Image 1 (cartoon, rainbow, N blue to C red):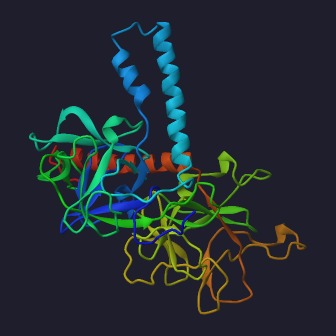
Image 2 (image 1 turned 45 degrees about the vertical axis):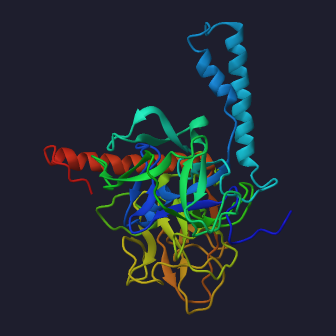
Image 3 (image 1 turned 180 degrees about the horizontal axis):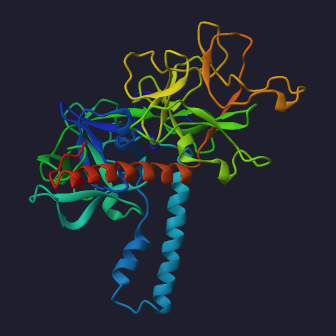
Length: 418
């Protein structure tokens, strides 16, 4: 395999698309499948801006099944055979997505590709025979779960310094068009979506183009890679206390984080030990940069999935969640052994001497920051499975929409979504 170049786009890379002085292409992917331009992107919104570049998948059987509906009886032998072909096609597409590291290819201008929304796993697609919600002269773009022939797009160079067949470099100025009809462009409308909690401008499909800039978030990493990765969801497991770090989901109060013990005599990964309150997203100081974290000295942050708060220490050295980051070094941690200049995350009342009767010691599940070299606590980062991560993000997004709906109702129908 040829050496991976850092300056050009590859299949499997995770990117975000920016529009000059406007914002980033975004979709929440679950409750709202519309695609829009999000300005003033926060860290909690940013994963909705991430797309994975994948090769054009095969949808021939899907098209045959669509044509067959109504043309032949759905109980016929021919229709059953088409359904079997569709199942095999889905399996092959899923396997191709899992094996992007095999014969990975650099992406060229004019090459058909698909954009898979990282948060939801859905694909950017044209909604067939549907006009856009706001700009009625354009067609509607949305995210769809299975993918279809309407998901194939291609990057085109905006300026004559690049041509079809050239490699795509990061920060290039590009347009994004349908691969089948390259005069139909992904386009930013001047109109803002109605009833949108983020006040996004609509992104649709139009004969007018929009200039995008491609930014790398993270190069492709195989799912089987057992390495720490930014923007992945983890739980912090205290090995000696046999407990997970957790935090209240109430956004109206600030309570200290705590250790939630696992059920006695069970596996830490057992379902009864895993709660949403213990899920944290691992982030770099620059949350727009993802990928594998190889240096244990690198400063990282833990963002609580449900509340969006970052783990930090208060003035009494308690571990709490904070809403705002005031400085680049605030709420940062390191994953390895460090000198007394850094505070360590410590379970103060955990029994250290296993020979002493446990009943003679007061056991609490508070967490504090200490600088003493004698206090060493072992933590394990336990990654959430792909299925659990998707379900957790779905629930978190749903809660955000319900809060917005409640705000709308409480103002007698006057939309004040925040």
